[in-house]
Amino acid sequence: MPFDPLPKTLTDLLDGGARAPLTAVELGCGDGRLLALVRRPGVVCLGLDRLPRAAGSVADIVGDACRPPVRDRSLDVLLAANLVRHLVPSRPGLEFLEAWLGLLKPGGSLVILEDEPTARPAAAANYRDLQAFLARLWPMGRGPLLARSAFLLRVPPQLLPLVADGGVAVNRWPQDARAAVAMLESGSPAAGDAAAGLAAAIGAQGLSCGRQWWCRFTVPVAPN
Ligand SMILES: C[S@@+](CC[C@H](N)C(=O)[O-])C[C@H]1O[C@@H](n2cnc3c(N)ncnc32)[C@H](O)[C@@H]1O
Image (cartoon, rainbow, N blue to C red; front, side, top):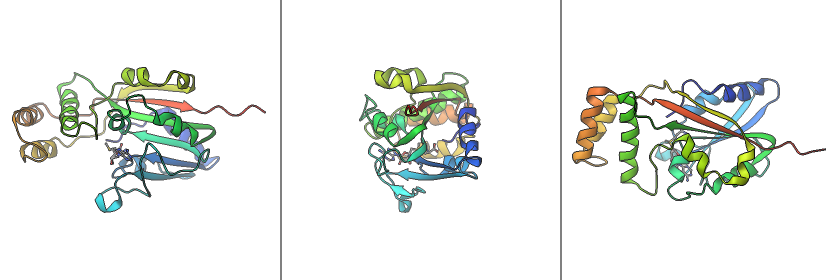
């Protein structure tokens, strides 16, 4: 899901495109909801996804986000939103981070955004549980919500000095509780007690993103 509001560190970065044009890519762009928030005057942001447009993405580039077909040192900004948690099951050491940082120009930024798993309010716990339910159905293809603290523990130690800033905040992006209940009750992707329990909880308490987190890495400007 996209993020509302976008972290200030990201909007400040993107608004800088009005002064000096920025070249950006969003990895795992999906249906383009985040791309729509990111694109603005001075920012050319292409979307990359493993799913082609025929499968419902808005990808300008079809490819594997772990090995993006993008030239090294060619980007000002690289975004990955609600993607890292899908990559963790197959790459728990976050090996792709090194490759991502290699795509950035000196001074460029990699911004990672994810939903933070939370127990309260109940609607946010339902969202966390829904993502965990879906992850159990496709164990190597997607993961449950990934906490910021768990992400930072996985970052290879040599990359930690490149973490420039980050934080956690409320994500007000609306969730469609009715659609989630309908999906769980349809038997597709799976029926069963867990789906029925989750559908009942969402029906009674609602569904909300809860909180979001972000982490910005920057590539140092080469010394003169
Ligand atoms: C939860 S959606 C996020 C969509 C968008 N970034 C957002 O925040 O609204 C995750 C997207 O990542 C894509 N994805 C997952 N693994 C991928 C991979 N290895 N390479 C490219 N895309 C991938 C999926 O196809 C899906 O469109």
